Length: 423
Ligand code: 0X9
Ligand code: ZN
Image (cartoon, rainbow, N blue to C red; front, side, top):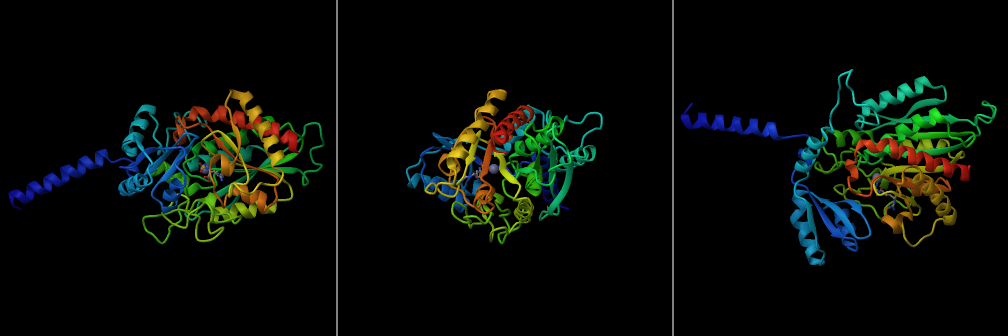
């Protein structure tokens, strides 16, 4: 080997060793930027979202935060410039940002195992892995005869979609009577992968409801705490801001269907046909195993269902239908708003967190093919809401786990007050 060739080999191995040292599980977000756009940006944001050029992370009255992948920075900049929309760069490189965040919080998003004597306390120190959540559910249901666990389907990557049924009874009533006829509540959580607080709250809510009861008479609670396990694991291991499921598409670089755009009711408007978009609706309604499983399980109990609550994050908003259009008004909107405010008031009383009760389409944005619209429009469940949990954007999807317990408590308080009114 010549001296030149040898030094090339040495140089290459030094370079790859350096690369191996610095590369982390956040590589998928290397070079991605967060931009702030004005709140009144108009249809250009939806257009860029549908084209797959950006991902809307947050929207308030005055601004929007969007994530732009490195390959689209130029194009997005050009289109915004052409439309006269200014943008400010909030984060230069998301991977570096997340690495610093992990260093500061001393918590890795992809920690998988722990020493039996020093595991993070669930719901307090850290978010759980999907496997830990499964283990938690199995324990919970083994311990209590009032809780039963069933797999309602399998994901594309062969994970189970778990549903828990809790039977809550009025302590003053005969326990066996009316068991079949009980009214029921449906809670869906984790349909969007990165919204970790949603699954954590659903799991802790199960635990607290089982411990304290519901205090509103006989009723069943059906909870699907991890509606998108493949996405959740991908967001832990590879891309903290992953939103969709992990369906492979015709474009090798663009995986995933937005499961909250894949339901049949008003399928299409306010979603995207582009596989690369964060709001890709799939090839047809219920093309995904997750939405199919949810649809079938909900349909089996539809006559009992009085309330459907879909847990998302973030924004602290209780959204009522319709979400597919700002022009149409949902039936019984007055009741939805009135009882929604009952929820928000009780939730605020718990820990002074305010939840705004707003229409999904006009208060947030137009989106169609959602669980919530389908529950009202196709299944006929009058009270159907999407709840955007904590926070209002300070930490966003990277919400500190210390929020899990108080956030669950306020949801429980709101739910209980709401159920008292509607059951
Ligand atoms: O976009 C969604 O699916 C939900 N928001 S999130 O930030 N969690 O992704 C909101 C769905 C509610 N419906 C409408 N806004 N139309
Ligand atoms: Zn969501």
